[in-house]
Length: 334
Image (cartoon, rainbow, N blue to C red):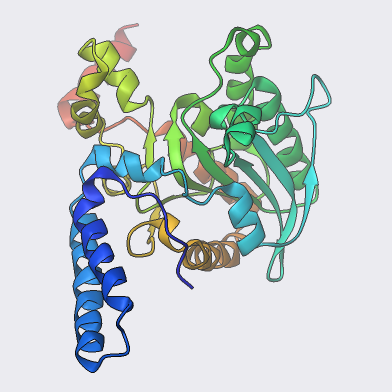
């Protein structure tokens, strides 16, 4: 079932104009010639939407990933899983609402769900720090993941954050250390881990719950070491170059699949996940079901070894014979 009317992005103006024409015609839909015109416009609207979304720039993909109506972790918890039981607190400082954790069921599989939450209205967004987790959020996440590993329960992580919380209190409580410990612990957890970037995948805030056996991205999400605005500010000293930075960062799902950083792209409904969250949830559920079916059959030692080697290999693009020979010669001399 299609989603309710949502806010249109700047590049969607032609789509919005055609939708307005369609809405105007529906008032006289009882006339045969009008019904024919409506049908023609529906087909044209679908084709136009498909064409627009097939040619999005990197910055436009960022806009889609940040859409205010884009489904969040709590939406997928409701639509993908059953019997969700939320778990709270890091047993050290407090409970960060930005990180959701809890037991759930996906068909016959019991899983631990961990994900970022941004909130919907202003009050929720302020409570969740606009999706930027504090150190206690990452400590909560890894504590619940270790609990899942104790019982051999697979873990599903939903990544959707512009980055970890950058405030003074976050630094005072050791956010960098918390993220580093979370990455280390995830690399050795003896249970299958599936990570899905559902919106923004920003910096350490994302990788803090992003070390897994399978890494997937929704079609119009991004995964990057820095936001395009942050990159533009550093390289060009102005946020107005954010579109140029977005292109240079190569952080879209297609780019990262080509680089081998992710394993799969999960297709979004026509016009983005915010247009039909139920269909998006169904696509995610199909993906998770297929991956769980495969991963639970694999020996745990094999999973952990492959996970470690995979993440250690990131960033290596060239290793030709000459470079290797020079490295070996240097090592022998020392």
